[in-house]
Amino acid sequence: MKSNFGYSWRAYLIYIFLALSAAIIVFRMISLQYIEGDFLKSRGESMLETSRVIPSIRGSIFDRNNFPLAVSINQYDLYALKKFSKEDFNKLKDILVLKKDFSTIKNLNKKTLIFSDLNFSQYEKINSLKLSGVEIESFQRRYYPLGEQISTLIGFAGKDGFGLEGLENILDSELSGVPGQEIIFRNASKRPQVIQEVIQGVDKKLTIDSRIQFYAYKHLSSFVKANNAKGGSAIVLDNISGEILAIASYPSYNPNNNQRLIQRNRALVDAFEPGSIIKPLAVAKGIDMGIFSINDVIDTSPGFINLSGTKVSDPKNYNMLTVGEIIAKSSQVGASKLALQVGIDGLIAGYKGFGLSKPPNIFFPGVAYGVINSRNNISDHEIASIGFGYSMTASSLQLAQAYSVFANKGYLKDFKIFQDDAEVFKQRVIGEDAANDLLESLKLVVSDGTGGLAKLSNYEVAGKTGTSHKASSKGGYDQSKYIASFAGIAPLKSKRLTIFVTIDEPGLNNYSGGSLAAPLFAAISKDVLNYLNE
Image 1 (spheres, helix red, strand yellow):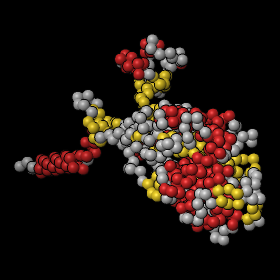
Image 2 (tube, rainbow, N blue to C red):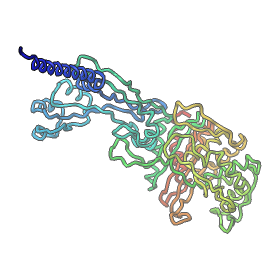
Image 3 (cartoon, rainbow, N blue to C red):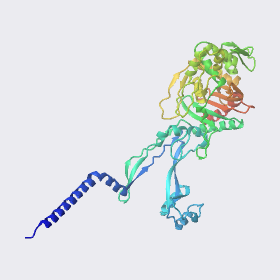
Image 4 (cartoon, rainbow, N blue to C red):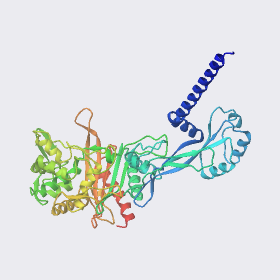
């Protein structure tokens, strides 16, 4: 009888093999389904789908009349691909002026730029040709219609779309928006699917008037150049609405030029010792405290005074002057005596009430706010110095806002630069009577004092001159470097505008506030008032 052992052994082996194979198949099926399923699904989708970023459009910046100050425009660059052909080249020659010969383009190893900044007409014509050897890339470019007139305020955005200077920088998160994302299907059987909605950048509207900005910058730059000065600033405020109409700074730069040389905004980031232009603020505090009145008489003879071993003098002996005349003549001796009567605590409280030595309410990178010497055991000479604008610093914006108090019946306003800001906050600094007294003395400065060149033929104005020495790097003050300034209110009928101007380091032939800054104020205010039909 034939044994079945061999047959049984082989059968068992086959059964075991089949069982193991089935187990492996089942395990692999489970593995593919539950362990590697997500990976394989993702790999399959990646072969059929790709994602693409949907760029957000950067928000624009407009002036109060919706004139664009910063806008994004579409730009197009043309690239040649590896399969770029002679036929492609010849078709492009009918549309573009190509500087390269085909021989320099034909053997491409990578995508190569052959034409930048296509206009929209060229873009449409090339796109309609459907050339397989070229590719057009679109991108956004920032454009600034007013150029250097306002670049130190607006700033600029880089090629990557991020704000790098000025308001473009400080408002970057709002202007940029948030990019979106969509899925592109390679088989073209489905439309792109948006998986993250794009959030477009927010437009911002300023209180700036581009026409007034033009006038301020035009005259400022002209005066700086004509007097061989280092720089200057000009600010125009609307006292009634509490809005900033212009902020000009020179030197400036062209934000549309990639080779730009960045300049700072002197009106906002520079703090300087203001000199005589501070005197009305000190006097206003003394009148408001009841220490003296505008018609009180002060003896300034013999034209100088010794304080803490230091001599303070006037250009000549003015003898007896009223408080108002001390401002009109800009008497250092008179201002010193008044400052000592007010005292250091009164001066500091008064200046802070006018908005000095604290940050102004404006959203701008690096904005200055100045300091006041308030050390212990301060000397009489230092107190007097603070009374006539030394041993302290302030910015042009702060001083402009401080002078607006005299036009606003004693109220200080937090002037705004964005149209959508809340209602302008104001607080009383001095009484209305004190404000009116100072306004009359500022009127006297122009009619019979140091500010005669600020006069306008058709309008009555008031203001104050300032001429201050600049500090020397060796200590003390440099006798050849000055800052000339003028703060004015125009016209007196409506008291609508406060205009503040500075000229930094003018030539020594013409450097005082009365001879240089006052006529600059007159030039700007004349054009602005005619434009506003005041």
